[in-house]
Image: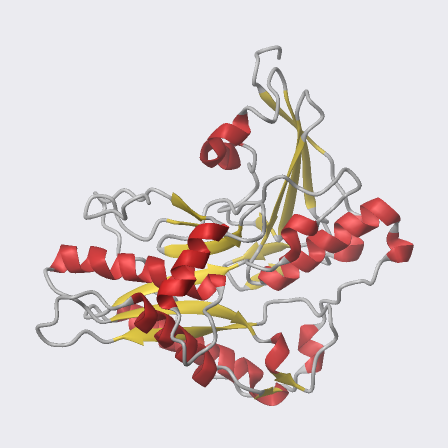
Length: 366
């Protein structure tokens, strides 16, 4: 037990208290869409790393996040929520949180973590509790069937490697200037980074197939601001839709699309796809957008790149009473998903994902 760098676990079963008050996830998931409300509480683990300081693994972050987020997942019966707190000799901490996407989205995850930190720092009496009763706000309707998501087009000999791309504030300002159509507002950080990555992936697929191909860039969007009548401010659950920007390759055209053009496609897709949504139409709107994405993914004549963004979610403002975090990251993402996150300073964007099988082609790491 004295080996330097050893990671030791012990389990603390929490069935009452702050966690269950804030996240009513005392159950497990079966067969993707079925939840067993077994009142077993949130899975909570505490671990201790002996012999090293937190500053050391922060220099090899990609390896660290897999070693220090050793949470349940993939079993036939999986907890809806798992938390691991890992302590270091220097008194540094890593807090890892895993909650199933079928019950929460990014907004809800950020709301829960911030509420938990506030309760730890100031007590439950100071807290505005998040609510998880989304279904009570919407009328029951006959809903269209949801198409299952196709399996990613990855073959047995392909190897997927997660790449992390970092765009600093100064670089993003330069990219914004390049992509700015002066008849329109300046692109946002997310719009310009998404366009840069999309353009690079279009180029990768062109190299693979010898020609430009039609492609779709899909992005998840929080539906809460668009709902008529508005929901309570901290209404949590899984409430998002997908917006798809489409680039159509012309016959015989070999030149990659301009960055400015891709930003325009991304912006137009959001503008025309997302408007005011009545509560009675909400579920059908979300299911329709997912079905359209899944149909596009099944079409072998076009490429589909799936983006998600945690930018502007207040993860870097979370304070359990020990100060704000030095670094926030996702762990692994599903194959062929590109995730965008704020950087530590808040002016840049980091992305991580494994959008290409490495046996075919790769994105230049720049």
